[in-house]
Length: 113
Image (cartoon, rainbow, N blue to C red; front, side):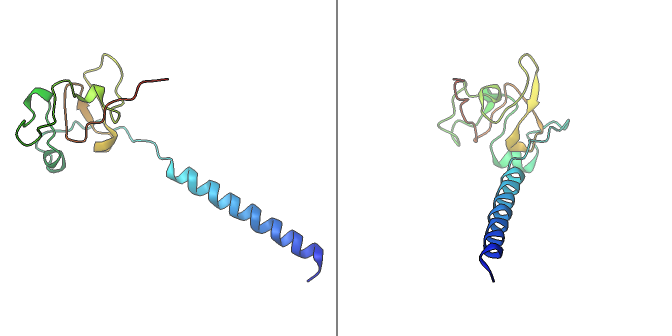
Protein backbone atom coordinates (compact mmCIF):
# COMPACT_ATOMS: atom_id res chain seq x y z
CA UNK A 1 0.00 0.00 0.00
CA UNK A 2 1.48 3.33 -0.93
CA UNK A 3 1.58 6.43 1.29
CA UNK A 4 -1.30 8.23 -0.45
CA UNK A 5 -3.71 5.34 0.05
CA UNK A 6 -2.86 5.10 3.75
CA UNK A 7 -3.60 8.78 4.24
CA UNK A 8 -6.91 8.51 2.40
CA UNK A 9 -7.84 5.40 4.37
CA UNK A 10 -6.96 7.07 7.68
CA UNK A 11 -8.98 10.17 6.81
CA UNK A 12 -11.97 8.00 5.88
CA UNK A 13 -11.75 6.11 9.17
CA UNK A 14 -11.58 9.35 11.16
CA UNK A 15 -14.45 10.93 9.23
CA UNK A 16 -16.58 7.79 9.56
CA UNK A 17 -15.92 7.53 13.29
CA UNK A 18 -16.83 11.17 13.80
CA UNK A 19 -20.05 10.72 11.86
CA UNK A 20 -21.01 7.64 13.90
CA UNK A 21 -20.29 9.46 17.17
CA UNK A 22 -22.38 12.48 16.13
CA UNK A 23 -25.27 10.26 15.04
CA UNK A 24 -25.16 8.41 18.36
CA UNK A 25 -25.34 11.65 20.33
CA UNK A 26 -28.32 12.86 18.31
CA UNK A 27 -30.15 9.59 18.94
CA UNK A 28 -29.70 10.04 22.69
CA UNK A 29 -31.32 13.49 22.67
CA UNK A 30 -34.94 12.41 22.68
CA UNK A 31 -37.79 14.81 23.13
CA UNK A 32 -40.41 14.03 25.73
CA UNK A 33 -43.59 12.95 24.04
CA UNK A 34 -46.56 14.91 25.30
CA UNK A 35 -49.61 12.78 25.90
CA UNK A 36 -53.19 13.86 26.38
CA UNK A 37 -53.65 10.99 28.84
CA UNK A 38 -54.11 12.08 32.44
CA UNK A 39 -52.18 10.21 35.10
CA UNK A 40 -54.32 8.74 37.85
CA UNK A 41 -53.48 7.58 41.35
CA UNK A 42 -54.79 4.13 40.38
CA UNK A 43 -52.09 3.66 37.73
CA UNK A 44 -49.80 0.86 39.03
CA UNK A 45 -46.55 2.72 38.27
CA UNK A 46 -47.89 5.98 39.69
CA UNK A 47 -49.04 4.11 42.79
CA UNK A 48 -45.55 2.61 43.26
CA UNK A 49 -44.08 6.12 43.09
CA UNK A 50 -46.48 7.45 45.73
CA UNK A 51 -48.17 9.74 43.17
CA UNK A 52 -50.97 11.93 44.51
CA UNK A 53 -53.18 14.33 42.62
CA UNK A 54 -52.69 16.78 45.48
CA UNK A 55 -49.40 17.11 47.38
CA UNK A 56 -51.30 17.59 50.66
CA UNK A 57 -52.51 13.96 50.40
CA UNK A 58 -49.03 12.39 50.23
CA UNK A 59 -48.34 9.63 52.76
CA UNK A 60 -46.26 11.40 55.42
CA UNK A 61 -45.30 8.13 57.12
CA UNK A 62 -44.08 6.44 53.93
CA UNK A 63 -42.42 9.62 52.61
CA UNK A 64 -41.09 11.53 55.65
CA UNK A 65 -39.06 13.96 53.51
CA UNK A 66 -42.19 15.15 51.72
CA UNK A 67 -43.15 18.79 52.17
CA UNK A 68 -46.36 20.45 50.94
CA UNK A 69 -44.26 22.99 49.02
CA UNK A 70 -43.15 20.11 46.78
CA UNK A 71 -45.57 19.93 43.89
CA UNK A 72 -45.44 19.05 40.23
CA UNK A 73 -45.35 22.67 39.07
CA UNK A 74 -42.09 23.14 41.05
CA UNK A 75 -40.44 19.95 39.72
CA UNK A 76 -37.70 19.76 37.04
CA UNK A 77 -39.59 16.96 35.29
CA UNK A 78 -42.77 19.00 34.83
CA UNK A 79 -43.03 21.02 31.62
CA UNK A 80 -46.49 22.52 31.82
CA UNK A 81 -47.34 26.07 30.82
CA UNK A 82 -47.87 28.69 33.53
CA UNK A 83 -51.53 29.07 34.47
CA UNK A 84 -52.58 25.68 33.11
CA UNK A 85 -54.07 23.15 35.59
CA UNK A 86 -52.26 20.17 33.98
CA UNK A 87 -48.93 19.65 32.28
CA UNK A 88 -46.74 16.85 30.92
CA UNK A 89 -44.32 15.04 33.22
CA UNK A 90 -41.26 13.47 31.58
CA UNK A 91 -40.96 10.94 34.40
CA UNK A 92 -44.40 9.53 33.59
CA UNK A 93 -43.86 9.41 29.84
CA UNK A 94 -45.33 12.84 29.12
CA UNK A 95 -48.70 12.02 30.66
CA UNK A 96 -50.62 14.95 32.11
CA UNK A 97 -50.27 15.60 35.84
CA UNK A 98 -51.88 18.34 37.95
CA UNK A 99 -49.78 21.30 39.03
CA UNK A 100 -50.55 20.49 42.68
CA UNK A 101 -49.64 16.80 42.30
CA UNK A 102 -46.65 15.02 43.85
CA UNK A 103 -44.57 11.83 43.56
CA UNK A 104 -41.48 10.58 45.34
CA UNK A 105 -39.32 11.47 42.32
CA UNK A 106 -39.80 15.20 42.95
CA UNK A 107 -36.74 17.23 41.91
CA UNK A 108 -36.57 20.96 42.71
CA UNK A 109 -36.36 23.15 39.61
CA UNK A 110 -32.97 24.74 39.22
CA UNK A 111 -32.87 28.51 39.08
CA UNK A 112 -32.45 29.90 35.58
CA UNK A 113 -29.16 31.69 35.12
